[in-house]
Structure formats: structure tokens, C-alpha cells
Image (cartoon, rainbow, N blue to C red; front, side):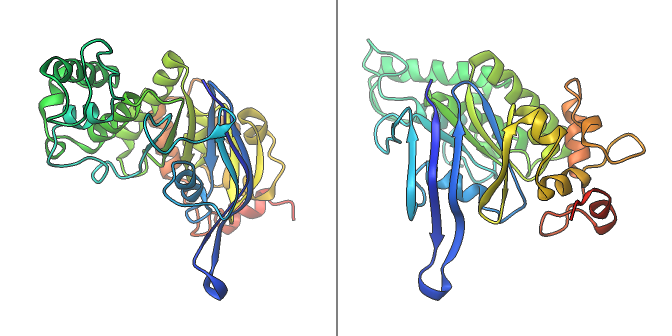
Length: 307
């Protein structure tokens, strides 16, 4: 396993007077075997940082390394990303098995059997069978019936598609997975199931993960380290229990204040109990009622603000 590092990373969109600083001098580490939750409102720069890591946008400054080296852009991709929209992340013309098999590294499913090539036609018959079998294994690993490999994305629900997207990411045998708002497009009950799956996979496989979300309840459920991003900058970072139990930055306190709890007072600790049910966490996060800029409604914000 390798450590993912962002060192002084800056990303700009546009040029000249119209340039927008989406990420500004960001320093962040995803330690091997840990889940780092990156939280902040929409537009704070979270997804931009993720896209820079996988090469979809180029940083204007800074470096992104995996295991001390630049992230490879060709061959085996040790950094895999699962996107927000499960309806757009899979090719509707390919079965789920073909989509997963396409992501298996050349020779990965059958080192001795000539499993080269990808997709529907690549490789020898033995190699194709090995890739199909590996796709079926990964499908079962993410909690779907083995027969799902023969179905097309249009035959699956949103939650099932997101599980397939996770299986596809795992097929690449990554060192780190970036999960970008992977539950936000799902209904509450499905969110809970996917969150439980992420926790189970991380613990079973000791995955390293950058888990991006706009709400703290979901992040706290899966992450052991939390980084809070606001207007393109990391404003708070540390162990989840410290950041969420005793936040130092006013923005973090306001995010926490926006999360409803079963009790009579606004208190993040009640929501973030270790034995909380994922569906309950998703439900509470869904009802957080954040304002457009991510701050809590005025009454809740005033009760927690230190300024």
C-alpha cells in the first residue's frame, strides 16, 4: 500500500481576470490503510482536488504523489476513482461484467493464461473466461448476485450501479480509491447500504481511500481522518474524533451545528456514535439543511459560532 500526498497543490480554471482558484496551496495526506474524509460545501474544491489526482485536470502548482512518485497515467492505474453519478459512470452498451473486466490490468485475471486485452473482444478465450470469472467474483464482493455480470446498466438500480462502479474500481487493484460523493445521488435507504459496503470493504481489504462528501455525518461514518475544505483551502484536518468532537475552526463548527440529532440539542457527538446505523446517519445527513454556502441556518449557526 502507498501513501497519497498533495503538496502545495493549486488548481485554476480559466485565465487572466476570469481565472478561478478552485484549490489553493492544498496539503493533504491519505495514509496507507486509512480513510480520509474530505468534507465541504459544493464548490469548495473537493472534486477538483480528486480530478487533479487522477489526471483529469492539471495543477497550476504543487505535486501529487503516490508512494513518493508521480501518479502513473498509463498502464496499471494504482489510483482509481468512483464518481458521483452511477447513471453516467457505466457504458450502457456493455454488460456490467464487461465493464468490470475492462478495468482488470492486463494479465491480472490469469497471469499464465494470456489474459491480455480488455473489453468484450480482448485476449484469448482462456483469458476472457478468467476475466469474466474475476468480474463475477468482484460483483459478489460488493454484495450483488453473480448473475449481475450479464446485465446491462439500464437493468440495475442506482445503488446497484454504484456497487458495480466500486467493483470496477477494485478490479484495477488500486493502492488508493477516491470516492467522490458516491451516495449523494441515491435515496436514503440505499445510501445506508452503500456506506455499510464501503466500511466493510475498507476493513476487509485494508483499502486506502479519499472519501469526498458534502456532509459530516456520512464522512464520520466511514472515515478515521477528516479534512474540512472551504473556498479551495483545507481549513481543518486531523483524527475524526478530534475534528468532529472538538472542532477548532468556526466553519467546521457551523457544519456540525447544521446536522440534526435525535436528542433535544444540536451536538455532533450524538449523531456520530460508532454504533450508529448507516441508514440513520444518511437520514440525519439528508435533513441537515445546509445553506447554499454550506453554513447552517442562522439560528443554529449563532448557537455555535465563536465569532
